[in-house]
Amino acid sequence: MNSPESSGAPAPVCSAKGCRGAAVWVLAWNNPSLHAPERRKTWLACEEHRAHLSHFLDLRGFLKDVVKFDEWVPPEGSERT
Image 1: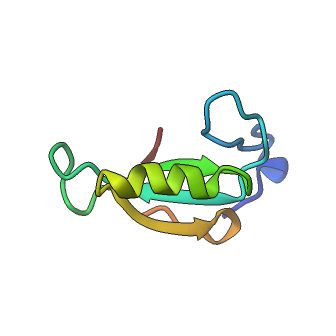
Image 2 (image 1 turned 90 degrees about the horizontal axis):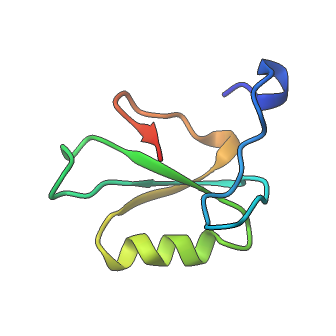
Image 3 (image 1 turned 90 degrees about the vertical axis):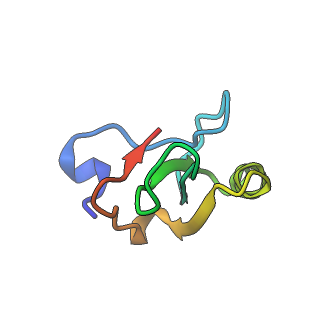
């Protein structure tokens, strides 16, 4: 994955409400009542909010994977929300 700095894109930030921390983690999720099983939506998380956001998704049965941002390879059909 290209770094945002090299592509001219803004640095990715945490998806937690009000947080502007640097994204360190990708939380891949899927709502089985709305999405095909292979589809992955993503939230980004800083170190501080990774556990909270993961727990939120896991309680609902949505969390599929947690991967370091610099190791994430988006599967076909995934999208960031």
